[in-house]
Amino acid sequence: MNRDYQGTILGRYRKDDPVGEGKPKGKRKARHEGKRGGHPPKYGEEFVKILTTIWYDYGWPCGKLLVPMLREMIGFWRRGTV
Image (cartoon, rainbow, N blue to C red; front, side, top):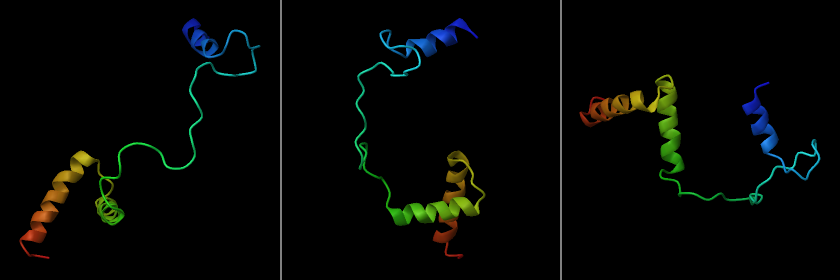
């Protein structure tokens, strides 16, 4: 075992606790149940469902590859060829 690894593992526990109790040190409180914080959703459920369907139909490309495909699709619809 590497000494750095051992120090990381053993440093997570209080020195006054016997080894094996496994109580991590720190002052972080337990997370409350229910709604999480953060930004409100940017897009509605209907839009996400449609976008997920399109993403699935194109074979799950990453966002970098999906954006040009979506732009081409929008241009295709605007020309009225659908």
